[in-house]
Length: 166
Image 1 (cartoon, helix red, strand yellow):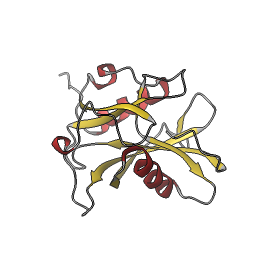
Image 2: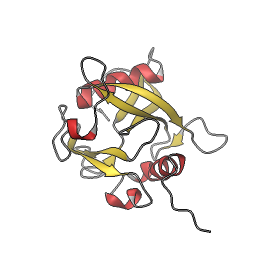
Image 3: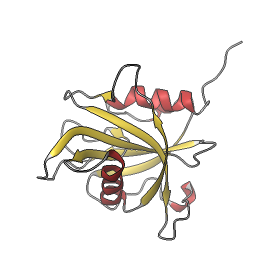
Image 4: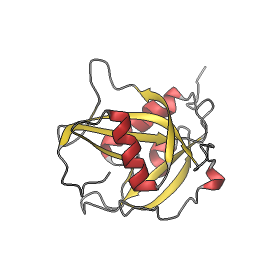
């Protein structure tokens, strides 16, 4: 999430849970924070602050382009807890998160094999990106930023990759 801009923001944050498939998601892309120092090394969904005059999806398009160098196709919003306008963040702001797939320059959906897991992304916001299997272990697979953990849980539940106990 790009924190190095001087543009005025709306107080809203947006994120993209990048999945391998919008219909049958099996993997999600996590990004390791480079800064601030208090969050360095923790993992998150790419995204950032909505600037004044932007709608959330415009802001998300700008942030994903800046951070990863790709366009995307948005899927469903990961719905926050009932009665909330977004997922609560530690700084008092809220974050809205959508699922999405990354696109190449021709608008073709990129698959995990097309994106180097373990690579440092184009921008300087992240140290590494990594594909994770989307299942009941996703929340523990990397050390997520605390605010993203309930979103990871909701994503796993929404994609039906939680075990069922009879």
